[in-house]
Length: 64
Image (tube, rainbow, N blue to C red; front, top):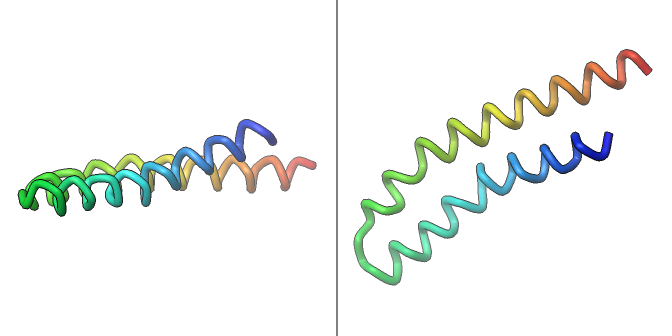
C-alpha cells in the first residue's frame, strides 16, 4: 500500500508539477515552446501512471 501512495504522488507530480515548472521557465525566458512541448509528455506519462496506480489500488481493496 505504501508503494501505491508513492506511485500516486509521483504521477501527480508529473501530471501537475512538471507543467508548472515549465510554465515558470517559459515566463522567465519568454519562450513558450518550453511549456507547449512539455504538456503532451507530462500528460501522457502522468495519466498513464495515475490510471495504473488507481487500478492497482482498486485491485488491492477488492482482494482485501
